[in-house]
Length: 529
Figure 1 (cartoon, rainbow, N blue to C red):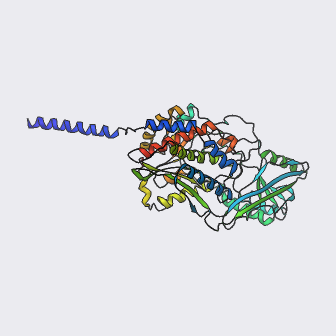
Figure 2 (figure 1 turned 60 degrees about the horizontal axis):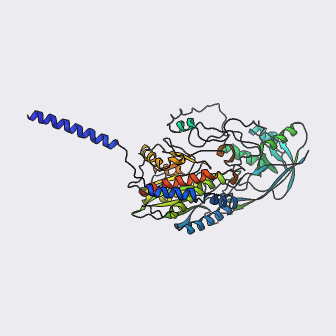
Figure 3 (figure 1 turned 45 degrees about the horizontal axis):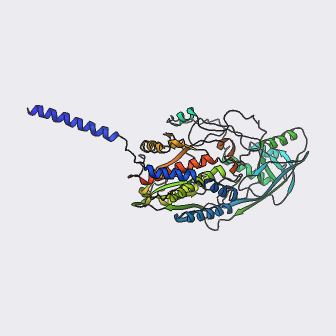
């Protein structure tokens, strides 16, 4: 009898253990506040102000290069809106950036053998020409130290073309990147990382930043009047996600302009540099190859802004929480931009959407349990400088992993930085627990076209600063539209490329996510480190 009882007890114990195991594996059922979500969507969709935010940030205060007067003007405008909406704790948090830069005037013409206004834009942190200059153009393909000796003493006072002509392809294939069924299936997979590359001992070295610095030093010492380049001809991937979506960059007057010099004590110690439309660059190369002289007129007026006080900043504001007010849900986007356009799709769109999230939540009278904090970051274009500075000050130093008191108070951070396309889902950043929660939240916005949770980790924008210290930071999945083919870091990054309906959807979806994160009983799960 005792043996029988012990047998039954063993069976019962095993059953209880199995039941407990199965129960533990069941996902937490998320409570969705249907009434409040309906109010958020109604306010966001029917009374949206997001395009007005975009226009102010881009048309009026663009571009917003970190350290420039215009980004400060944009901050003053945004702070005024935050006060109008009744947000709390509105302030800037500053950090050392280096010298600022702004462009005051630019014009360029080919005047011989024929007259042609040149489409182009000076690189940021390039010095000016000290007035209008007229100069001969020379093609000098400088690729090695031997080339320096070949051209030494021959370039003074000239405008130098360093790159060869490049082929200009007809536009074909995918230019507008709206996710199709195959893209969505790919986004829902976790890729196998490629094998680590083995260094080729015969490969040329020093062709990156060090070579560019050496080249600039040579050209500056030779006293060139300016340098023209024709930009990159590479296709561009969506950035940070290792996906196969690739679009062809559009030429035809679209120029992808990058930084042209340092912002430290060496600021201005490079030759004036202009990126031209490839078609105009190529024309000059072809003329010179025929032995016909080319002459240009060029006027660049640029100003450097000394850092008498820290001139990098992040703009912060909050909706205070209630019973869990000490805990924080953060939303954000980078406030700064490149300089060639007006910073519309990169990233007035993200900043405007997150500003609209805060306006919506205040307009519907939301009372979040956790504090919802918006952060508009500076210095993203120079390497996530603003978000890294904020995380280091408030949460943890990624180099030492020394944690600050607020480290355990962050529930989640949500980021937008991929242009003007609608939100299709969210990247789970290799965090399956968060992914299961997001899958349930998506049901509340499936009618707005949000359908998926991508499991993989993505990079290249400000949520990375949070992920680097083990905090749950997330980036929304967006349709890229023209972001990679036309507007990213180009002179075509302007308000006319922003899509109104997509922006309205973006802000409404982000508002639902922020509200849900602020209302749930527990903070979002963190990945094991």
